[in-house]
Length: 110
Length: 115
Picture (spheres, each protein chain N blue to C red):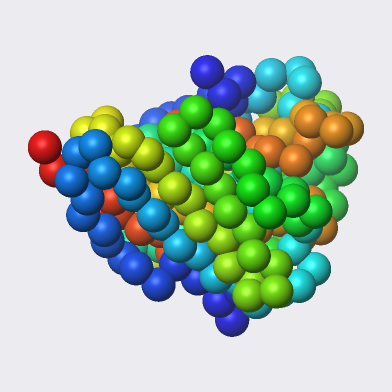
């Protein structure tokens, strides 16, 4: 069963615009949510996280929003830059381990 | 730098051979994880150590897979009698304990190709 879903396999955004990546989860026991960025042939790199007691966390160009009632989180990147082109994974924590979505490939076009 | 080193970075092996991957986390990472990632999928949890104790194993970890963390420092993941379906990236990750332990930090991964 896929407890964490990223329904958009890919997303293309113009440089300078906002990128919005979405993630849905089913397990109400998840208490912490994270976003990772991954380049080919490298391990995932941590980007930003949010606790289940908050609804927003911001770090520079990156903002994560959490809607617990909808079991939905999103990552906003603004302004988008060419170096943001990568695969983005959302992850949810339960019992000390992370469950990942399938990833969304973000392409930033100049 | 995530504080997690893995080697080898790439391994090509013949079906039926055994392979071993090593992970070296910094001392602050008292939790250590192994994940596997195949093309088009997110990382899948395999197993988790708190210091030297293996606390959880996924059902993905068949009896051909074994992981150890003998002194609570480095860890090894061994795959016996490799099969083509084992071809994947094997990711090690570490996490500090306490209030900083919410985030896990991944190494660069070890690619396995079984031919």
